[in-house]
Length: 122
Image (cartoon, rainbow, N blue to C red; front, side):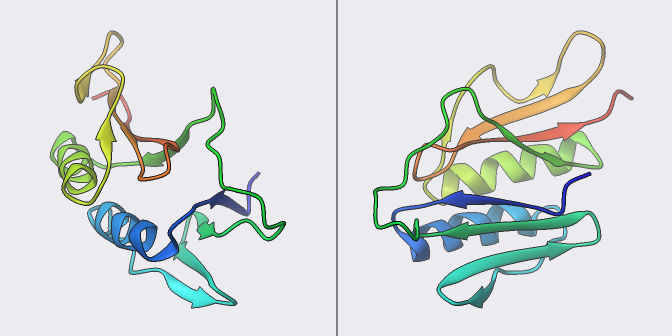
C-alpha cells in the first residue's frame, strides 16, 4: 500500500546518525543522500528524512507513529537501545510483549517524531 514514509527533521546529520543506528539493527543500510535528504531503502519500502522544503521548522505529528517490523524481541531491544544511544528518548511503556503477545518498543527521535519497533505475536 505504501511506497515510502518521509519525516521532517531539524538537524539532518543528527537525525541521520540516529536512523543509521536504529535502522541498522534491523538490517537496513545507512541513509543514502539525494538532494539533501537521506533515504533508507529496504525490500519492504523506503523511509526518508528531510529538512522541510517549505522553510518552516520541522514538527512531529501529534498522534503519529512510524512502525518498523522486527524479527525478534532481541532485535527490538537492540533497535530501542541504539535509539537511546543516538539522541532518542524512550516513550510509552518499556519495550516488551504486550497483552496479545505483540512486541512493542517506542522511541522519540531527536525531533520528537514517535517511532516503534513492532514484533508479531510469538
